[in-house]
Image 1 (cartoon, rainbow, N blue to C red):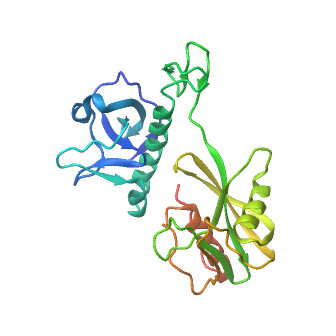
Image 2 (image 1 turned 135 degrees about the vertical axis):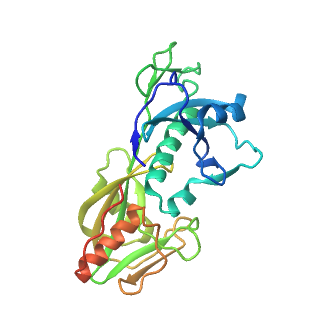
Length: 275
């Protein structure tokens, strides 16, 4: 399959479509891509927004955004995280973009300044208020994710939201007037009470939960004892690279950073970040 992200015109006929509601997609036994007109007929007046999201094998693809997860015969709702765990990267990228654009369309139906209905601009991804001229584009929130290292050990933590037994890298959002490197130091200090140095950028990944651009780093431990931040970190430990716990999905930048450091320490071939 060939997926090209873009903005096909809503005036195009036929095509494929997905139905999205709050990080979940409507699916059947064959998947979640349906003939556009058939899906529109099933959803009818429950659609609150429609956006073109690109082309799959040359065929236009659209997302229908719903206000709530409508129940339909022989169809079910599946979380986007499940698609990520299945390892189908191209499909996950398509759904990730559909989710972000669907969320944006739902959250900007009305002007945040004067409350009037927003209008879809023609030819580009922007909503405009004809009353006060406010413009809204899809947004991204920069965030960092960091693997803290100490020789053959990696500091990993788990959130109460994680699946049982899984540990991952530390992460957090960049605050106003803060560089990403400052964010790395602050978040590590806040979440586990240790200090780091030699902060080095590795790679980035768009992360649709819901608007994150994850900037990935490695950093060296300098001082401090692990004290998990209450309500944020359930547990944090130093793990030997020879005895790691359950890790995030391979499609994630968190897993890439962990695998990269392990490969570097052991002299193995470095992994490739899924993109």
